[in-house]
Length: 345
Image 1 (cartoon, rainbow, N blue to C red):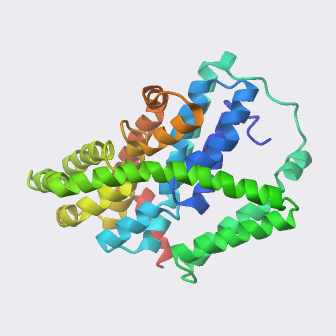
Image 2: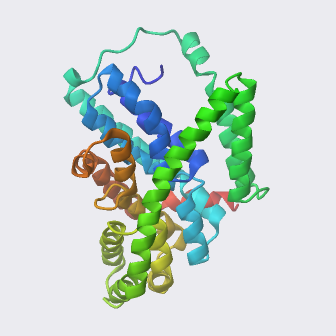
Image 3: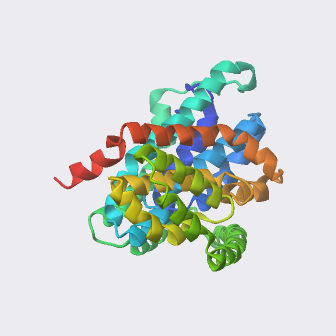
C-alpha cells in the first residue's frame, strides 16, 4: 500500500522486495528468483509493462550481493585478508544508494510514460496501511536478528543463516501458515529453484576450471598491473576487466582467480581495501546481468521463458545505473568508508 503514491507504483516492489530479501539471502540469483516468483505473476496480472517488470527485477536482484550479508563479500574478505564485518557494514550505504537509483529510474520512467502505468488501487487510510504492513514486523525482526548476530560477533555468517532458517520456520508456525502441504510445497519449490541455480553454477564451474587451467585471468591481471595507470585509470581498467571476466565466469571465481595478483597493485595505488571490496562487488553485480553468462539473466529466462538478448536489453538501464553508482562512490568515497569508521569509534 505504501507504493501506490509513488510514480511507478507497484514496480517499486521489485526493488524494495529485493533489498529486504538481500538482507537475509546473500545471493543475487536466489534474491532474483525468490522475489521474481512473487512479483512477476502479480505485476503481469495487474497490467504492468513486461519490459520494466523484468528489467527492474534483473537489476534489483543484484542487491543480493551488495546488501549484507553477502557471499561475495565473504569470499573477497578471505581472498584479500580484509575484515568481513567491516565489508558488511561498508555495503549498507552503497546498497541503499543503488536501491534509490533503481527506484528513481522507475519514477522518472513512470512520469515520462504515465499511460503505461496501471491505475492505483482504492486509497487506504494511514491506519489501514499500518494494519496491512503489520505482517512485515516479524520479518524485520528476523533480519535484525540475523545481521545483528553477525555484527555483534555472536555468530558467523553460516551460523546466522541457520538462525534465519529456524526463525522463518518458527514465524510461519506462529502465523498459522505452516502445515504439511505448505511445508512440502516449500521444500519442492526451494528444490526446483536451487536445482536451477545449481545447474547454472555447475556450468560456470566447468568454465572456471578451463579458464584457470589456461591461466587467462592471472595473465590479464598481471598485464593490467604492469600498465602503470593512474588510480582512476586503474579502476576503470579493472571495471572493464571484471565485466569481461564476468561474461564468462561467476563472481566468486572472478574474485578467487584475480585477487592474489591484483591486491598488491591496488594497495600500492593507495586504494582502501574496504572501498575496493565494495567496488568489486558492484562490478560483479554488473556482470550478473551481462550476457552470455549473467546469472540473473539465466534465472529470469528460466522463470519467464524470454530470450537472453531480450532480458539483457531491458536490464541495460540498470547496468548503466550501476556504472553511475561506481562513479559516485569514487568521487565520494565516504559513501563506503564513513560507516565502518564510525562503527570503530
